[in-house]
Figure 1 (tube, rainbow, N blue to C red):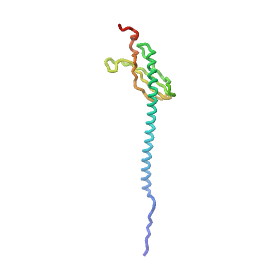
Figure 2 (cartoon, rainbow, N blue to C red):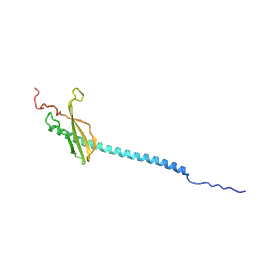
Figure 3 (tube, rainbow, N blue to C red):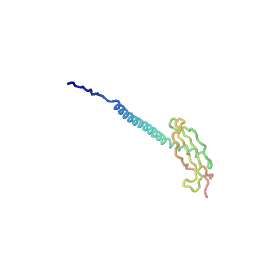
Figure 4 (cartoon, rainbow, N blue to C red):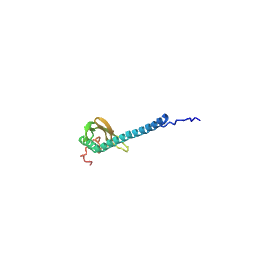
Length: 144
């Protein structure tokens, strides 16, 4: 009687290798996307920290410009004013709100754009000024 010997092949088939590589690829892409999301959020936190750091300085600049102007006049726009943080500058535009009867009221608002090395980083919320520059009445006049 003759014995037929069958060979058993050891190892992985080509299909098994392709499936394993596909699973590895999906996992790698998922991890890489998490890295990019993490870098984005870290950059946003850093920008927000810088904004909080320079906001008082920007408010001081705005108030100084308003105080320099006589009543009834609006300050001139500011372009590229250097801040205490190296590389950061601010642009400030002024707008008047003369809506009578609105909840906002009349006044002047400062719109500041924070820039880093000339590139806009963040537009700050409009800042209402404490003294209206559109009121032509002299604050030293006696109301009586």
